[in-house]
Image (cartoon, rainbow, N blue to C red; front, side):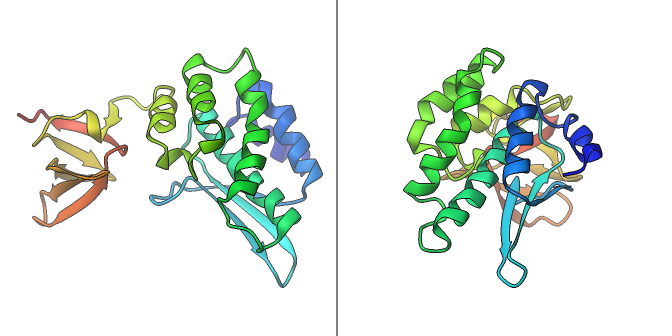
Length: 205
């Protein structure tokens, strides 16, 4: 990867872990792209069987540790594919072993915030497929967010009015991991993940 791209990465990754990411980029040639936020995923790994090339994309709105962990998540996919191809499960035991190994420098570093370190240590080999599907890790990472006025949907009271992606909703009842919320403009109901970051407008009861 070109020098200027490494400079760009300094904006997204804690500086103490830049050597780790630089080493991975040098050891595993890949098209690494920072992209606009996506609702359904934080990062993505792809392999083109025609060109035999790899691509990793990471959402550009993540805080430094969320960006770092998501990047390692996708590199675990890349390494897993190099070692096993499509013969193993994408998030099977082989991937978990690889991901856990990549996470060790973060877990062992004195620079890592304690709340992140404890969450990663607790997850260990049972770490979820992604940080956004692991409630404890997601909450830990959310404490580092610098977005003013944003809170997790689960922290709001029932019937609270909130903004998500520029649209106003009223919080309803919990359905497993999602709240049934009403779009105030259309009146339609949507299931919204309880860990979504939203902006509170009016308190509920």
